[in-house]
Each structure stands twice: as C-alpha cells, then as structure tokens.
Amino acid sequence: MKPDRPNNVSCTNNWPGLTSCNTLIISVDRYDFGIKSSPVEYSGRNFIPKREAHITVLGTDLGTHLHQLFTDNPLVEQQVKQAFESTDWCYTKTHDLRHLVRENNELTGADKTEESIIMRLEMRGMAEFYTKLKKLGLIHKDHPVPPPHVTLYTRNCDLGIGVHSETELIKLTSEHIDKPV
Image (cartoon, rainbow, N blue to C red; front, side, top):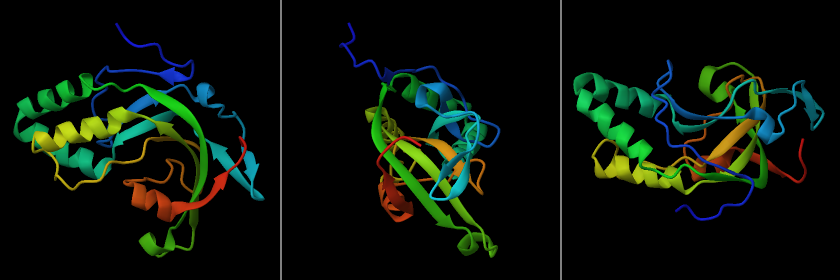
C-alpha cells in the first residue's frame, strides 16, 4: 500500500524512452504548474510560456551516451528501462521559483542573454535513478544529479536552460522569485 501523499504530488513510472534529441523527460501538465497561455512580463521583459512542460531526467549529452550504449548492446536499454520503472518518480511542487540567466555569448559568440523561469520540485527519484545508473556502470560515479525542476517561461531560449547540477543551478540563478509570475 502506498503512503498517503499531499494533494500537489504527481507520480509516474512508465518508461517514456528517449526523445528524438536523446533526452529522457517526464511530461507534466503545464496547467498544473500555472503556466499561462500568453507571454508574461517579468523584470520588465517578456517571457514566452513553455508549450510543453516536463522534467528533464537525462539531458542530451548523457542521453546520447546511453543511446550509443543501447545501440551497442540492446540489453542496456532494458536495464535503464527497469531502473526507471522501479524508481518512485513522485514529485511535489515547491514555492522555489527562480529566474535563471545564461550569457549565451560565452557559448556561441553571439550577444544574446538566455533566461528561464523555473519551479524547483521535491523529487527523490532523480537521485535514486542516477544511483542505479552508476551502480550499473552506465555513468561515472561522480556524475552530478540534475536538480528536479520544470521550466515555466523562457526568453531567447525556447527549450529553456539546461541545468546539470546543483552547482550549475546556483551559478545560473539570477534571483529567487517571491510570487507566481
């Protein structure tokens, strides 16, 4: 029997497979996160609402690495699928809203600042899943666990800003947001 959970918890354990971009995501209902259908203004700038909301479990680089392992040995995909499906992916929304900023000129030479507004989640499954992948020897034991979050709005980066670790989240956080956008 599952323990009682607060009303704002959502769960899944169905293996979604890798996307065409080799990411592993858990889709969530954008309306459950209060994402508006039209742009919002924050700090004097317009932000575009995410059309498709999700939690990124594996980013493109790690997903591409695993996809190559799947190609080399189909049993690896079954191991990852089993690890995913045996993980408790329940999450709770938090009041931890953040404005993330990345100066894209460092990456591309273009002078374009990318910005996202995200909501952090409480989700023990993320660390549990990464631990399973490390025990299987599929990722390095020191590979960081990405902070669970949902991107709500973006500016100059339709997909949002990839956040691969708590350290990177701290670096990208411009400010904490006190009230819903």
